Length: 477
Image 1 (cartoon, rainbow, N blue to C red):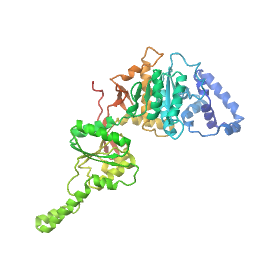
Image 2: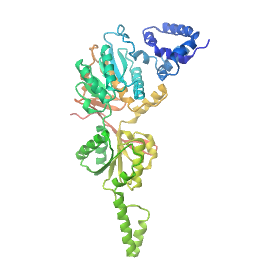
Image 3: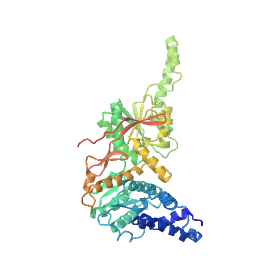
Image 4: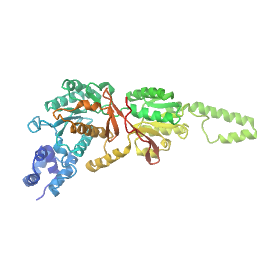
């Protein structure tokens, strides 16, 4: 008898069979699975025609089904994840089964549409958090926002129908805005994944990585190390406007002169003219040519030696700044850094500074960026998370995955210690001592904005080294 394991996995996913198994004892689980296999073995080809094969959801429960079918070991990695993750396609699911004291968490993500890759990746990290925290009193309801405000509102209404106590998500600020009023009316707090401060407060807590903390932290550190005059190459977009405002404020606080900036289009393929102008290359090159002419005209021995020292340089004098801020990552960062070096902004004299986008080990192969500083969470916990995520799903997590994981872990932590199990203790979200997660300690301000204590990292050859650890506690306000 031939049994297609992929078909079995697909059938498990297409039904609520796993949830049914949650309430049964071990021997019944095995008996039902064996009966299920015998039943489908004779009609395999018909089922394949009906349901199709190889959907992207297979990996979520792959090891779970293998465990039951092959070794009956119910303690495999994901033996409980799908049981606690209820996809609300059937409006009647769980209404009669959930207990009064079980906390229901709505997870609003773009699970379909153009941003479905993002949503499904974040869902996987949520499933990891459920598995790791092991609490039978908390249930997660993933709901599809379709990546737009209309979809978010429908998902929120469905969450309300199922009496959720708290919402994690949505990702995009317009979707957060679309659901904030109806959740406020029902006293349902929202831990949103956005970074748009305009939608925070009044029951909305932003879990996203705010640009303030990384910029303020690295600028303060650079000031302590001698940065006096700051230049910045800034993306010409909304993010760039925010960065510019933060840089102005942070420079003033740290007694740094923010003396030069230039805005570039990050979508452009050529930044050379902008960087050439930013570095004062034309003036510095002209100064070199003028000095050479003066030395040639003098014709004495001293002038000849001085002239020989100028043969291998292209400019005379340094740029007007001694540190430069580059809030980019990936291709754009590498291109800008290379152009700065080409136009004689020497990284041995001018300190390159960056953001969390620099948390990329491949930067250690870029000579202009070696020695550069940026602020970010320590990488130890994140690296372990990445390794486990790859083991489970055979892919690399998105950087945003940690905030979903930490959001769910935070809810588990707060609910675990709550005596009133019929509601979520949302007031505890404002605990000013903060919480510890994959990305270090964090807390919410009274406006619902996340603050984080960050480390300072230095780009080294093939490595990102922590050169200043983050504070282990928040300052008292």
